[in-house]
Length: 303
Image 1 (cartoon, rainbow, N blue to C red):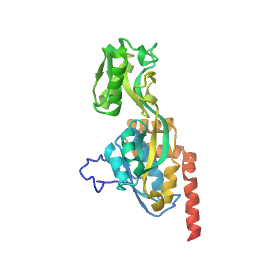
Image 2: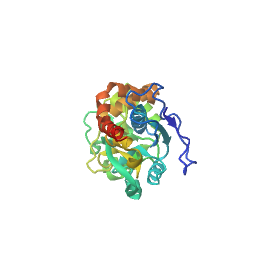
Image 3: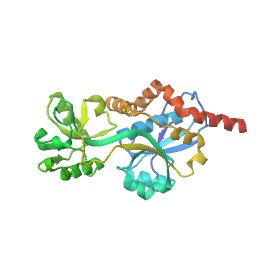
Image 4: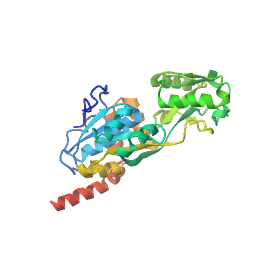
């Protein structure tokens, strides 16, 4: 049964979010490759990383691992991996969002590459706002206000940079709000077909739910596209070669992760959303497990 850990041993003061990942079920795994080996996955309390952690965590459980997840903040996640206090993560955004942490800790962590390509942040608008293709096209739309999220978040820092970079935004206001408040305002505006400019990012369910488009950013205020990365602590491959193989082969598409995030938002059930996607995508799971099955067979023959 997948468990939520109460703490990382050296970071017990961090408040942990409950319920990130739950059990896959009590049934005997159909593809048992290991026998209860324990793995801890650190996860950020972001929808897309919760979705990815649920999916890969459930896959690892299904092949026999005892998976525990621990929710931490960004800096703790990187330091814990660097110090070997946790085993793995599928939460890092590179090269921009976590770039400073990559510089500080990257040489102490093994990067297994992207499981999602094309992650992005920027200003977004409903597609019915015709005539807008670039941030430079903004004039007096939406009352000259950008509806943002929590102050101090990376996307808000980039939005502030955009306000300073583009002369046409000199008289615009960046509204701080919670993510939930921004999404509520977005829904209301779209229901009434009113103008709204938001700080958008994907993967996120809003791009599945609504017809939205990013505004081009010719000055690069938001940076370019990013990837969401799989990481493991040093020595993890030696300790857990089969799990390492699964994580190394873990990759999927933007539509995949956004469909899981959307179902999470609709049902408030990360476990169920992950299980639904896994059941509908067994061919993809088989690709992730192909090398791991070969390793397990070789280990069995060597015994």
